[in-house]
Amino acid sequence: MSEQIRALGLLSGGLDSTLAARIMQEQGVDVLGLHFSTGFCLADRHRILGNRSNPDKPYRNEALRAGADLQVPIEIIDIKDEYLPAVVLNPKHGYGSGMNPCIDCRIFMLQKTKSIMDERGYDFVFTGEVLGQRPMSQRRPPLNDVAEESGLGRLLLRPLSAQLLTESIPEERGWVNREELFDISGRSRKRQMELADQLGIIDYPQPAGGCCSLPDQNYARKLKDFLAHRGTDVTPDDMMLLKVGRHFRLSGGVKVIVGRDEGENIYLERFVDGRAEVWVDEFPSPLTLLEGEPTAVDLETACRITARYSDGRDEPKVPVRWRLGDGDEGQLTVVPFQDDGELEELRI
Image (spheres, rainbow, N blue to C red):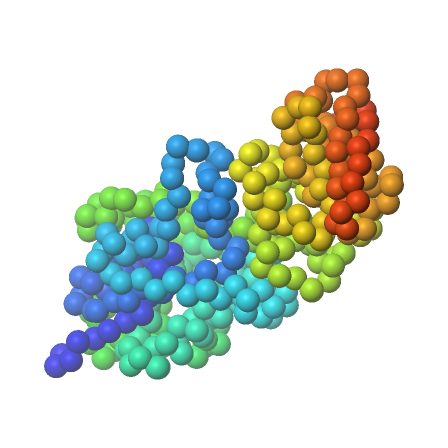
């Protein structure tokens, strides 16, 4: 080949996309990694609030980490404002197990990637997708749909499963050697982990269910509730709030968000404007926000919920402070919720 072949790769920082990038490097391809920020990545919560399951483990952007390890430049592209209305709210190909529009998501990202490929003169695009790994988006028909509807067609290469798929243009033209690509399929990651050892890739997140909040049933339930009561008037901040705290629906338009720890309380303080807030002064307490226009009954219920999750939960009565969005404030002395069943009826 007289000219250097250049390719764009979608790089999440997970094992599959990291392997795909290394395989391209092994074949002499100049790689640029693209990482799209949708606003629904689980890592966003860790970045802002810390890792509640492992507080001693600092946040790191896995795409940047993988790029540094591979010596591949990474561009992070923020698509949050476009992604929500274009992909999440009305997906052509529907949702997966939760509110995850996986096929439309892939098409959208690859359409963006194709535009960059065309503008900058890259030769093709590759991903870490594996045939049969994900039930919605990585079966053969949706893989074909993604390639065609993104506009990439046979300029899209999946190195890990290439030998099981129709020959791509990069293979046909000799930009990469098909014989040195792979025939991996299914949900097991055993072969990928073996390949990582062979290629000297030792630092990668343990393969799991992906980094997106949308397939998570708890998150999906909160999102469906939000859309049912607020319609499609949604902002990225609204979507981030769904990842934080305990959520309770009091009446049609009123919802309560209760911080679960100090980090969440601090984060919720950013969203006090335009919302009522509730807290306990006499005991360590969550910060509780009320969305909507609470009635006196709603406010009392919110105070009882806040008392329930404060350190005064075992007291017969707890004085709870409140402040409405217009600056009106006061205090209610309430009996903390004791009946978990009654509380669960309100939980979203």
